[in-house]
Length: 113
Figure 1 (cartoon, rainbow, N blue to C red):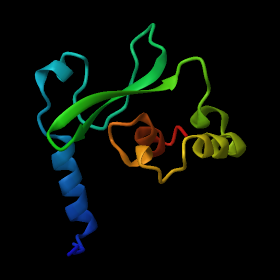
Figure 2 (cartoon, rainbow, N blue to C red):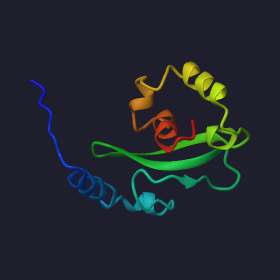
Figure 3 (cartoon, rainbow, N blue to C red):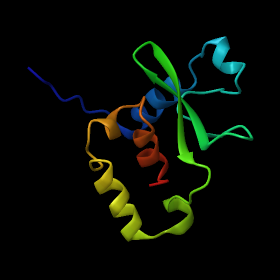
Figure 4 (cartoon, rainbow, N blue to C red):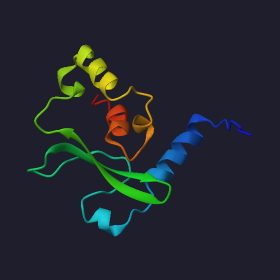
């Protein structure tokens, strides 16, 4: 049986901050990550625009996204291209777009597409 838990906005913010401020493994700190879910620019020479440290359960993964040679929605603001992108990727409610280990999840979250 599923139950809904109702929390206040301040409780949500507190929970979110505790998750984001948790200690991450040193191997990710050595790569320049300080928090889970914070986008950073990809290193020079990369084929992608950004990287983010994702966490699912007790597992971590560096997710890379954005082709460095292409403009994304945050740059071109073309609604038709945005719609075509999401249609091509299976929609904003696809399994991949709801998986934190997928670049689509972070594109949706950051508004790059």
